[in-house]
Length: 293
Image 1 (cartoon, one colour):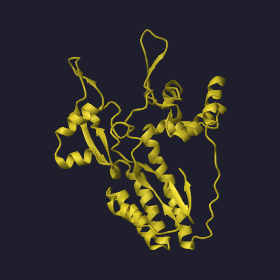
Image 2 (tube, helix red, strand yellow):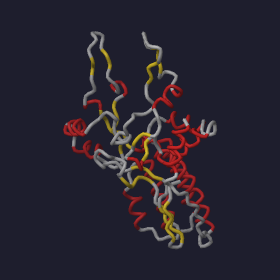
Image 3 (cartoon, helix red, strand yellow):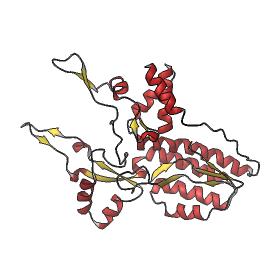
Image 4 (cartoon, helix red, strand yellow):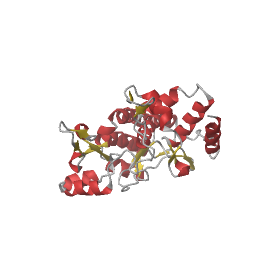
């Protein structure tokens, strides 16, 4: 355990914490109040980003809940928080967290006795290799399966499938290979796939974030900022981001906010899907702050 703690500490030491104190005196009282709601929305949006890295929320909650139980667990949670997943970004997404560390403790139905063996069989809390498509697609789906499925869709359905603001899922009833009564395997097929818009997949978080952005819009004294926050809140619920993108390009305010789905780096399969991020740019009096909250 000591060697693993040292290894984690070395990985963490590659990052340099920076404390920023932006000058807010130039903001109006309304915009300053709006900023408070924007930051609260950012915290909500941050939860969505965790889901791109690893959908096992129970794993995340367990690591966070046990962070103070030992120095090793504290380091583990810190590095997990940095990467938003069990894989290290600076090490070509190599897993820094062992599946054995977590699965047996996390899932009550993850273990079962194995006849003739003194150990247990367990279901890993996360795959050892990071899925190239993150959680935008089923982890066992490859490009060939996707293209075969897409070729059978209508033109409208194809646009949704490769759209920026959708995820691809498998029907629950066919989410894993099952054994039929005759003992044969029923394997997955591309017919299992279907499209889910962000507004539905992340509904709970996006509804909270939208409510906070609406409150921020009501507080702001800047007409263009009010419009951006209002249209972005609407986009979170409608899954239509065109109006909010135009509002962002027309923004003329001391407070410049970029929040929502923008970049496609996490989609390692096709670079189709934009991931939802907290405010990455807060411009205050021409001071640009890069931040992930």
